[in-house]
Length: 69
Image (cartoon, rainbow, N blue to C red; front, side, top):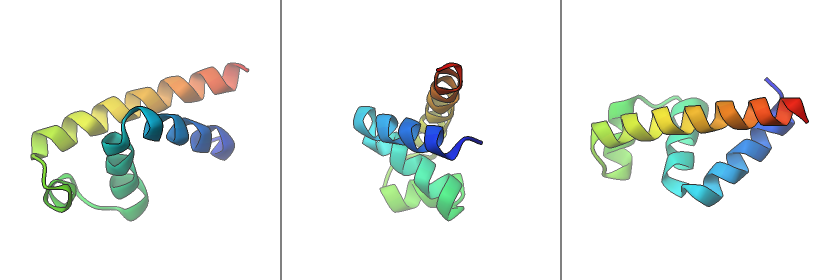
C-alpha cells in the first residue's frame, strides 16, 4: 500500500465523512470489531457495516486515482 496515497485518501474521507473516517480508524488501525465500533460510536451495527463498505470503496477509488497520477 502506498502510505502517502493512503494518508491523502484518508484526509479526503475525513473531510467528506468524518464518521466513516472514524470507523476506518477504529476498524483498521485500532482493530475493533464492528460490534465494538457500533457500541463506542453509539450507532447501529448496520450503520457501521455500511460506513465500512462505503469507506473502503472510497479509499480504493482514491488509491487507484493516486496511483494513476
